[in-house]
Amino acid sequence: MSPGAGGGVTRTGLGWDSHRFKAGRPLILGGVELEGAELGLDGHSDADVLTHAVIDALLGAAGLDDIGAHFPDTDDAYEDADSISLLREVVAMLAARGLAVGHVDTTVLMERPKLGRHRVAIRERLADALGLDAASVNVKASTGEGMGFVGRLEGVAALAVATVRQSAA
Image 1 (tube, rainbow, N blue to C red):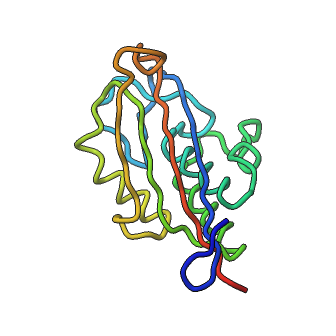
Image 2: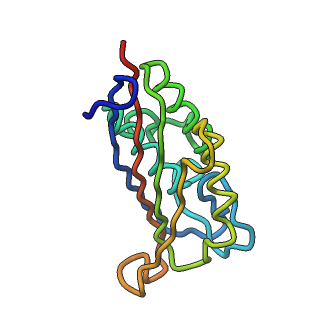
């Protein structure tokens, strides 16, 4: 942990998630449904792989375990859950511990559909849920170049890095 501005402590967390494609489900990334996507993602909740990675990054920065510990896929309460709502819960959990989100940087690994035209909406949706200005949230995209499960069009993965700041007590 390093001292931040105003004497607080800055912490960094890393999040990763992946989900396989599944027919008959919407493709939701960062709280935005990608209209026209042929396949959605399989999961207990809405399978929003990007938001799940952000949640894990925040929980990691706060030292609060991972998404499965807080929202287990064995709990029917989280079946088809809106991941943006879960993200808001995590932000509130951090705030209750005196932690504020500073910045989030993400990468979506997906062959198609291309993310370009959705990036601004995703960035704004995540920023709203995080209580940040959109300039403090970055959304990037990459492909698997035909390699691995992403390259074979079997699923989507996402990475996130988040910084949180703890105020001096």
